[in-house]
Length: 149
Figure: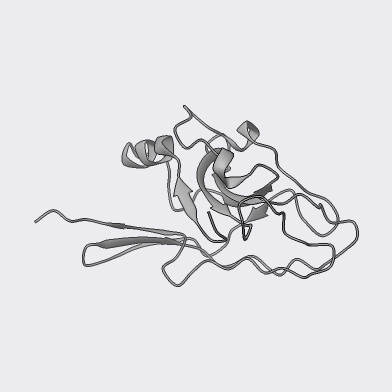
């Protein structure tokens, strides 16, 4: 895969449709040492504890997302949040950051969605020599399009 590739967890989609999550929940971004390819989106009740979070130096254990919005324009439902701040380079930063994970901290740290943070699927971000900014795309965290008539 490539940087920016993303996948949602099947249980997160199921729980969303059952009303388990709310706009007012605490949504967080966590960085992992797990490769994107190793993230199994078909796990039953996956949480951030199902993976290997990384933190240290200027990399926080989690980043609580602000300005959460869930909006609908015609048949597209968009889930979005403000971007996290820049992570400054530091010799103390972890050298094994490969994947970003969105979790719902209100609902047992449920794993919601994962992003590949590597260029080649295996090489970690270099946060020791480079500053880093994680930015959600113009489409938001994710969108859902209803195709029914």
